[in-house]
Length: 351
Image 1 (cartoon, helix red, strand yellow):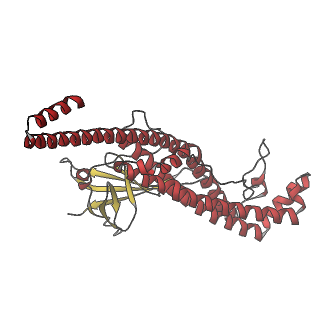
Image 2 (image 1 turned 45 degrees about the vertical axis):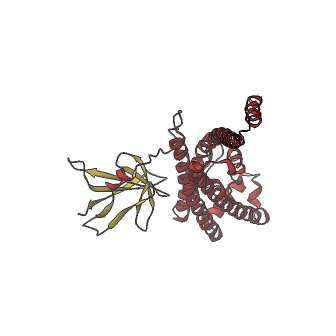
Image 3 (image 1 turned 30 degrees about the horizontal axis):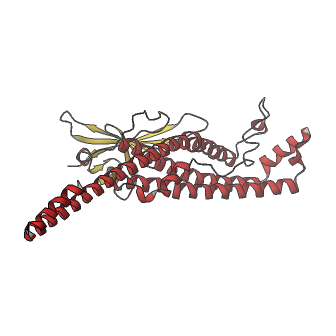
């Protein structure tokens, strides 16, 4: 092809058609430039597709890691710490008797070892997340909002949560040091040791102080675990939604929907309970519903939302014309000794 164009130029020169030669040469240069630009464009598109495929592959791995962390670590630790918090409440109520400290067939009793918990910082699955951050320069703009949500999980809240875990660990180690240095029953080598320990747990004021402090740290840890759960759940659902993943979400994780602005319009406005005077204003927060000066509400399914970081849900009621006319707030309270209690508050939408 190059020889062909060269022959045409040489022929023009020999025929003394210099002006035509210049015009032709200029056109040839334009064609070469266009060819280069086309090649560069194709190469850029290929590179962008390669980067996009690589990022989506990493995000799919992050999605699976989030599922693992939510089920095996976060949900488990929330349930565990809720039980410890409830046990602490019972101890602090001073209603326990000697019989309440009887060990089961496995030699265990939760009251007997309440503040002897063995704890280490939680180990989260962060390999895929770290790989994503290490490739931050190739992440398409359309996925940067997912990266921000993942940074909220692994780069922020997970670290804060483990800081509280370390605080709890240090406190428990100090308590164990006091037991070891001052009480013979710590060795647990005789039946009398058990009796002496129960007497201590039932009557010693310092033990109640320790339980109170233990409960404060546990409650603090629980708050961050719940925040971490909601942030991880949001990121998990967001990846599934934006990547349109073809495998089913785990039924052990709260599922979320991402309504459009138009869908959210039906819920916006002021709601009031005439009896108590409680009034809420619902506003839009990006693709979520939010209580003005309050928490974010995540959509679970049609007309039902979950309040972030709280055991509280909202369900909207529509009339026959499909207009939202009221809402019910369900506040769930965990109870160790009986069924969970649910408080319901109904509010009417103001015109």
